Length: 130
Ligand code: SF4
Ligand code: SF4
Image (cartoon, rainbow, N blue to C red; front, side, top):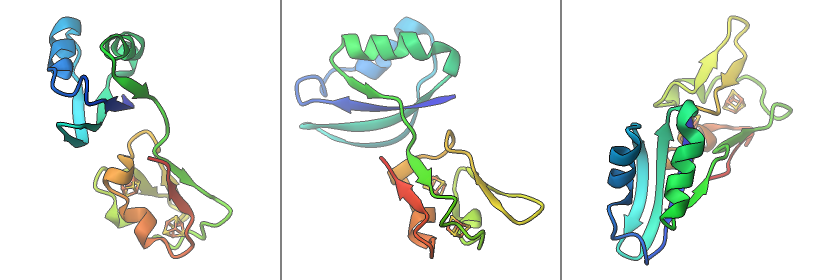
């Protein structure tokens, strides 16, 4: 799966673009979070990786700005494996290894829609990029 950040301007926000693309492409677009009103806004969506190119193209053709990027950056030099972040993650993007080190799956993270781990980290090792 791939996460996309979709930015809708005031000009296009009133159009049923996401529904149209789901019907047209026959691909599930899973909405993970949204901050949007009649003036525009952003939707964080998840789609199957195999359909990335055609879905991005379909949104861009309709005037939506699409960003495919990491939503979180973890500074492994600062992290001291305290484990404070591990149990907080609502999407199981953080795992605890047998040696008690923590590993982030940046592909699962929902970014600033959540941010719980970044708030909890005593070393400020986690940066939310979106
Ligand atoms: S920001 Fe939230 S979803 Fe992302 S890794 Fe941290 S706790 Fe998990
Ligand atoms: S809370 Fe910060 S220092 Fe502790 S394990 Fe998580 S990333 Fe590392």
